[in-house]
Length: 225
Image (tube, helix red, strand yellow):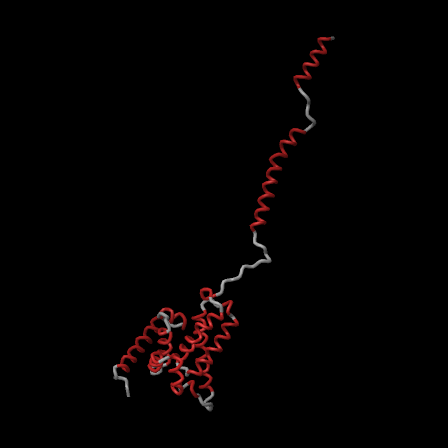
């Protein structure tokens, strides 16, 4: 009997305590799953922290190389007036067109990407629109708009003697040639002028060539009356 008890005790010691049903397997299975959950939570938290606050919007950079509208107005209004005069307008009319154009620029400033070109396109269209309105009303006196030399003293004060001389030359050109030369004189290339005006590059080059020939004849005395 003592031998049987010894054998029984030996069997119990060798086998060790038996785990509860499924206990070890559950612990082994939960270990990787819990670790994956923890990693997922950490990743989600990091993503949440790195995501910008929807209520905070960084300010959009202003157009024209960072210029505000006030800075643009101060720096470019005088040049815009001169440009409209090179198109053919008198000094008073050019100043009025420039102001109307700048008001439109201020109203849509956030959407304008290239304001220097934008204001010249708008001012050019406004000038042509006013000329067309004068032709549609033949009973009305066109005044300085179609006779821009009438206020030459004021123009000389606004532009200075050199630009006033250029203006006098431009007024001797046909409308299309004057328009092309005005853009070129204002610093644009023929390719840019063609794109801005919606013309073929060859047409711009032809107008520019004819304008230069006409001005050369005038400067050499061949075109003087």
